[in-house]
Length: 187
Image 1 (cartoon, rainbow, N blue to C red):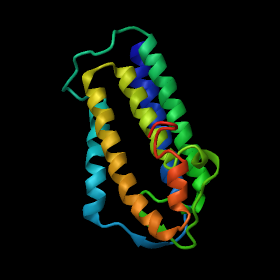
Image 2 (image 1 turned 180 degrees about the vertical axis):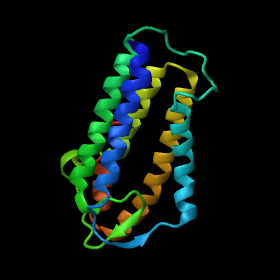
Image 3 (image 1 turned 135 degrees about the vertical axis):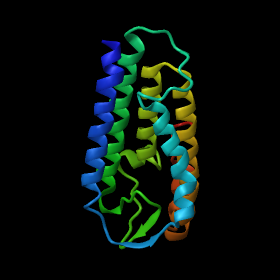
């Protein structure tokens, strides 16, 4: 059963999330400004490496760091489902302001409600929880490296996004002071 969770359930959750993400990308506002290719690569390369490390065929760093058994795969699957669900809630709440790239949209607005009331970057929060859940389910050292790379990618992208948000919205500095960036009450 724990093998089926790692090899079927968790990949199915990620695939369902990806399909939703692709379909939802069609319903966004026109872009006024977009980050450069170099900027995209700066945060996408670590995130891509993080995803590769979680792939079921990845042969490196397969020594276990968590005990085998059904508990960790089950717990990991729940974390993946909750994390991806949180990211979808944030994406839906963001509406037409969303972009997979760092962009400024036409009639861009600062969203501070829904999941954005708790963290400034809830999509990254949800995805990070899903990465942690995948790592817990796998129980191998590559999972820890994957989470570290995903966190690095999100922190790099957050820094870039927040420069633009401060330039665009006068109230963004207050929002930064009162709302955690990624992990509620922590970071």
